[in-house]
Length: 198
Image (cartoon, rainbow, N blue to C red; front, top):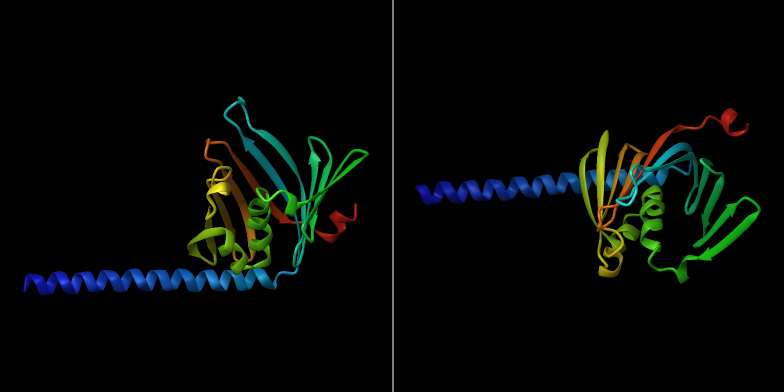
């Protein structure tokens, strides 16, 4: 009788675990579908870099623009104006009168960091799974997606990327490094068309 009870309990636990996993996968699929439907985004952001060598975080703020499937623009307004544009694998930086261009194929260590955001915005689960082990928690009304690098080389630079959001809106992206340093990008509300025209 005891053996039967233990066996039944074990089966119930396994079934429950499989059910939770199936629900999480189903919610992840729905989330990726929702994200893929969003073709454009224009939001504010604040960013903190928490570094062990500094007494206080480095802070910046500005605007983020996204156009499906792969154009991402980061306009830093404070403390110093700077614009980064990623499109078709080319990263263009504008700082003052200077412009720099980088082909990301020449910097493979940067690609996972860029693709973690680009592929999430695009709802491109297949691209994410090529680079990371995905762990989804929560539900569509408040979700968390943990990305752990699959490649050991990338793992030397990035321990984990934590992305949080509500439905098709990403609210924060935290990048943790193995040495304890981290950056936190907090995404604000949509920028109204009248605000962006100013």
